[in-house]
Amino acid sequence: MSHKFPEVQGGGSLIVAWQTRNKHVVVVGGGEVAAGRILHALNADARVTVVCPQTGLNEEVAYRVAQNQVSHVDRVFEPQDLDGADMVLCAIDDPEASTQVWKLCKERRIPANIADVPPECDFFFGSVHRDGPLQIMVSTNGNGPKLASIVRKKIANTLPQNTGAAIENVGRLRKKLRTVAPNAEEGPKRMKWMSTVCESWSLEDLVEMTEKDMDALLSFYQPNKVPSLQDVREGSH
Ligand SMILES: C[C@@]1(CC(=O)O)C2=NC(=C\c3[nH]c(c(CCC(=O)O)c3CC(=O)O)Cc3[nH]c(c(CC(=O)O)c3CCC(=O)O)/C=C3\N/C(=C\2)[C@@H](CCC(=O)O)[C@]3(C)CC(=O)O)/[C@H]1CCC(=O)O
Ligand SMILES: NC(=O)c1ccc[n+]([C@@H]2O[C@H](COP(=O)([O-])OP(=O)(O)OC[C@H]3O[C@@H](n4cnc5c(N)ncnc54)[C@H](O)[C@@H]3O)[C@@H](O)[C@H]2O)c1
Image 1 (cartoon, protein in one colour):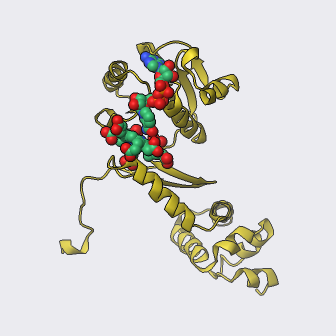
Image 2 (cartoon, rainbow, N blue to C red):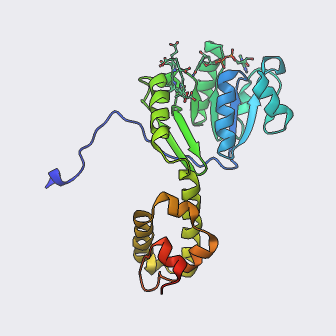
């Protein structure tokens, strides 16, 4: 019967959406690569500390420091910088120092990425497309970062421009649905109904959906119906 199940294709990496909100991300280095890492971490609502001499900060990192978007330790890395770190992102131009950072992170079991040193990475970065809550990451698992960026742009170009707004509205609708039908035993019905809305409404409909439309649509949940946006607006129930 095993042929019924997906075949294992080893050699990948585990793609997850790591929740770093309010977690402590330590970035070592303040150059161009660090600037990218910092932006990714801030976009994920992390608390960021940058360890790098002030004189080594590039314009973007200096700006984030000046704006208090990140904490700053104005010197080269020291082991105590790892105290309380939930994740470490190292992007420095000193291979010996960065290997030292990696070793210390491993001793303390702190997940770390040492930019451009695949054997010293618990996780790789990928090429990211972001549109509100929509996040698409392309990974080539270390084979071709430039190609990851090219593929990411191709994918982004196929998406309707308002995909992020549609997803935000779906998020609101799901939240409201949970207040209308909070019971755990309703789970399967709730999920099926939500899936039907997403399948039968166009992205444009979902973007257009107002608070009032949501409330009207939710009144069709109990009888387990999914009318069109037009029907919802005409109030034909
Ligand atoms: C995706 C992206 C994310 C980011 O960093 O934000 C990213 N690298 C990006 C750009 C880029 N990096 C390099 C080039 C030059 C052209 C080329 O080589 O292709 C370009 C292109 C450019 O600069 O445009 C050089 C390079 N990179 C690595 C090595 C070492 C090695 O492979 O051994 C070398 C060779 C150094 C040398 O030759 O000396 C290693 C890694 N780089 C990764 C991520 C991880 C694997 C991701 C994957 O495979 O999907 C991994 C394994 C570890 C990590 O750093 O996390 C970002 C594009 C973001 C975007 O534009 O959207
Ligand atoms: N992924 C990419 O696209 C990419 C591109 C170029 C370089 N790289 C690699 O990423 C690393 C960083 O690249 P970059 O372009 O940001 O370099 P960069 O020279 O712009 O920045 C290096 C930074 O590290 C700081 N630094 C050096 N030693 C330090 C220490 N011990 N403690 C704290 N800070 C220290 C410097 O002050 C500087 O701010 C390099 O290893 C480089 O090979 C990656």
